[in-house]
Length: 149
Image (cartoon, rainbow, N blue to C red):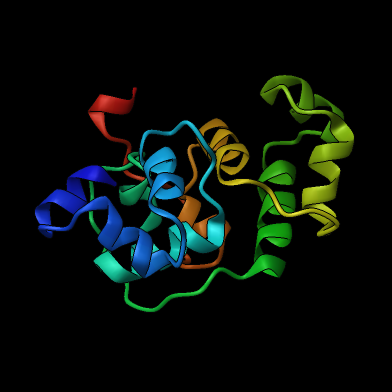
C-alpha cells in the first residue's frame, strides 16, 4: 500500500481522507499493525485501479479494476466451493489454517464476515485469488509474487 501511495505522490493523511478515517488509523493499516477492513481495502483498490491481490502483496500482477464491489454472499459461496474442491471438512480445514471450526463455519454461512487477515490466510492456503473469493473476478488462482513465497 505504501508503494502505491508513494507512486501517486500521496501522503498518509491524503489516503486517510479518501478512506474517511483518521491518519493514525491508516498508518497502522499501512504498517500492518492493525487489520484493514475489507470495505476499506476495496476502496483503495478501486482508487488505485488495481486488484486486491496486488494491493495486499500476494501477487505481482496488476489487474486494472475500477469500481468493483465486494460481494459478501459470494464470499460464503466461494469459501464453501474451495473447501469442497479440496475434499476438506470444516474441522480439517480449521486445523490446517489454525481457526476454530465455529469461526470458519460462520464465514461460510455468512453469520460473520472474515477479516482481511483471516481471508488472506484462507486464500494463501488454497493459492486462490482474494479478488476471486470476494467476487471481484472469476479468475480463481492468483499470480504469486516471488517476494511472498
